[in-house]
Image (cartoon, rainbow, N blue to C red; front, top):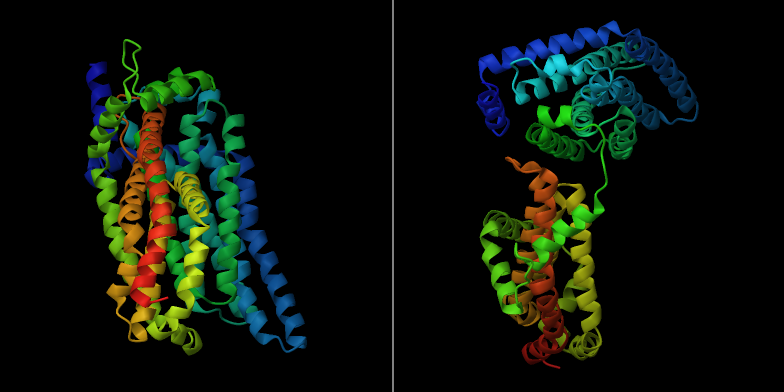
Length: 495
């Protein structure tokens, strides 16, 4: 019956892509063919894509020839050669930009045109329907982009000079994955908004980051830093996979048909967060301080996975710092200042300075957590991991430099890091794990509950840990770093 079908759909939506069967792919391709035919029937979409596919590459080939001739007059052959892939990047990007328009229309556009209900009444599962729509949105613009790149590459090869093969391959790969990124993000927006106007307004959150990324790629292409570009390819692929998973997890046909307008329910958000933060019971009673802390500690089981990941990344960050120290050693004039017989003259200055900085150190740690929350939320936890790794990589880098001048690295760590690090490292790991769990909530299966409710509750859990444990322990670590660490350094190195 209908209830059984809905249950199967919910179960299928929570399965990974590795479980897609041949029957799933047959239904997905049926949806893709249907959507692609509808797109190609609309001359308002086909004409601009064809113009950008044929006319624009020819125009940029002509422009490239004129630019090369002009630069050759001033013996700027290298600049002329490096400018050719930049124009190819533009040729590939402009047709794929139409994938954003198509993707924003796939659900909310059909809903406004009253053509979505018949499609959603088919026996397709949520996952089959979602993936089919996603592929249909990306296929025509990407194919047009490939044609445009081929026209430009052939024109440049015949009229000017052959381009570097690695640059051409990178442009093709970057064009493809950026189209997938824009489409995956746009389809999420289209399935979660109630009007085309709202979807178009939210599209700026896709266009602006991709435009900035395109500028960075153009700079790297100009200096031929292909290694960094391949790392960008990997990063974009991971981000795309995250968006696709989010879309599959959040898509629900019943909610899509039943939601007609979005409301900002600030009072509900506040009440949900306060209930999770305060631990208020169903009867309205609040727990005492001891009970509140017991509730907070009881939630540590939910942090096992993110804490394990961050602990692993801690060791990775140490290895990265050591590797960078060997690859980029400090100049000899600075290295000699790290020797034990030179440290004595710096100890008293360091002691006086740190005694005046406990509030500064405490505020710095709070600013770091604020940055971790902001950037980590925007990147679904990726920047949380990187920010957590940064200080330990720096410490490992400096410690390795001490070892390079014959000093005992363990003695250096014991004198400068351990006196306050035994408090700071565990609390940073705990707060970062809570933040990572909160930020990764959107990627996790929501089950029968609203993803917004889960996200707010995870944010409340993070707030409990940060306020109840993070702030007091960070302050204690700042006091230790200001008053105890300088004494230990003076005892070890003199002064």
